[in-house]
Image (tube, rainbow over all chains, first blue to last red; front, top):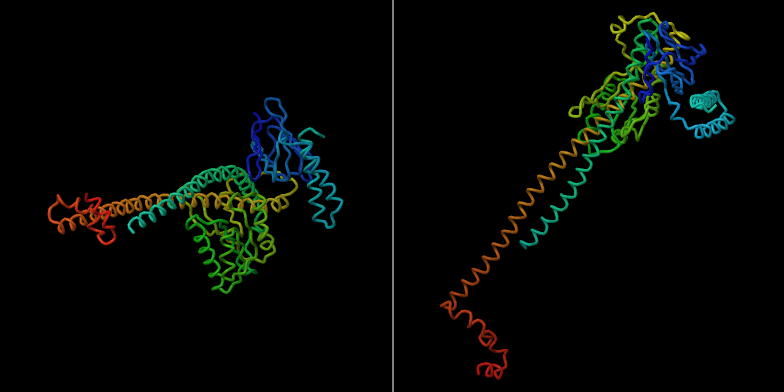
Length: 134
Length: 324
């Protein structure tokens, strides 16, 4: 029996479908791969690229910006603040944004801004990873 | 004079016709926007449902009860009111209902001797409350036409941290709930502290593994839950606004149509009146002349002979020649 995945962001359902496995990164817990029959888990999601192996053998990649993942009864619910499908990523645009973010990181003063700039950088890296451009 | 009245009426009919075209266009635009807003609400629903179910799981696991967003703050007395209105008018009683409801909350707080904190969304409420000298803690414009999640986050940020810090006793959200295209309802909802129905949570299996820990996850999750609730309130308000505008504009279009029919009727009568008057004038004039001159046969030849009418002005030699 496959895993059923629902990846939602506040504004829309980003992706849903049946998969054989889900690979993602959690805050503090590192990379976790979920297969059928996984024990129920609720975890905080890092800014990363979620890799899902679809039942038809294709690899689906989605860049997510933080959030949560809940796994129970072979259902995977991924709630992300922002989610972008790999095919929607334009590597050139994202590289441009990343250069800007790097410049912003070099300028920042206080801790809060630094955290935000670092998150931006991670987000750009995740998008590029999802698109297979890096 | 009669012709002048007809011309004035024609002008008014033209004005009404062009007004009708505008209101009709606005009605159609509002109708498509209602559909779009409903679609957006439908798209936002999966996230709202999932986040609610995750929170219920956490509550069942016993992690929830003491979080500052979930518990009462007896030490605070300030009541926070968030009023969601539109930026533009021409949507019937949509804005005034919300404003009235929000003002009632404020007067209640004042009557109870408690300070208030007012956060407004939309130009209409901003104008109203500023003009009446209310103290406005936060203003958000350009939101309800097409709300985004980022805006919801900003609005939630205007009261969430204060509530967590124990400065606010309650947060009420005053907005219009969208039930269907035909019915919307202005409501004042107790928003914070969050209400979690524990009965519903109880029957959910709570044997989850947590990564890193239930408390940490809850701390991350609840702010997002607040944002998501604000977002769905904004989407509701947006759909309601467009529905209200559609209805108001439909009424205006119907009114214009009726006014046009009535005015056309009045104009036709005025025209008929002036024609009748003209005929009456001609007939009565002819009648008057007939009585002066006796028989009808000699009436016209006599009148047409200029020497009768202008005997003094005509040259007698000319008259003699024509007589010849």
